[in-house]
Image: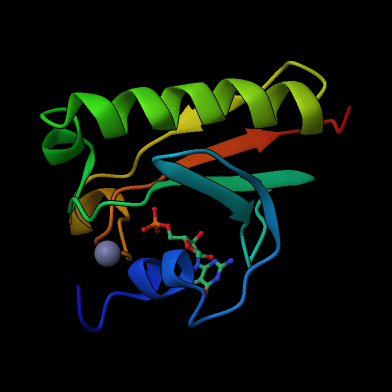
Amino acid sequence: MRDCIFCKIVEGEIPSDQVGENQGAIAFRDINPEAPVHLLVVPKSHSKNISELSQDAESMEAVMSLMREVSEKHTNGHFKFLFNTGEEAGQTVFHAHGHILSQGAS
Ligand code: 5GP
Ligand code: ZN
């Protein structure tokens, strides 16, 4: 999608500190970390939020699978997986993404 910052990261038009990838999703470090480990898991296909993403079973599976893989590799196993949904909940990028927030690296 044009003018979507996470579509541009998926396409490689904007660089990111990538920590993982599978067929349907990528994971990279948040540019403004709010925890010692702060990763974003992003479906390659554009959905505006988790509700829309939940209707795309293939992307959803890719996101959950990549969450499992990168959380095992980059956290101590104690983490939150958070989807801000809507402006009033703090969503600022309207391409669905889950935040992995952990106090401890592996
Ligand atoms: P939201 O507030 O929409 O749930 O989360 C958006 C997140 O994306 C924020 O934590 C913000 O720091 C991060 N972010 C915004 N732009 C970029 C970027 O260009 N690169 C990276 N790595 N993270 C970004
Ligand atoms: Zn997008």
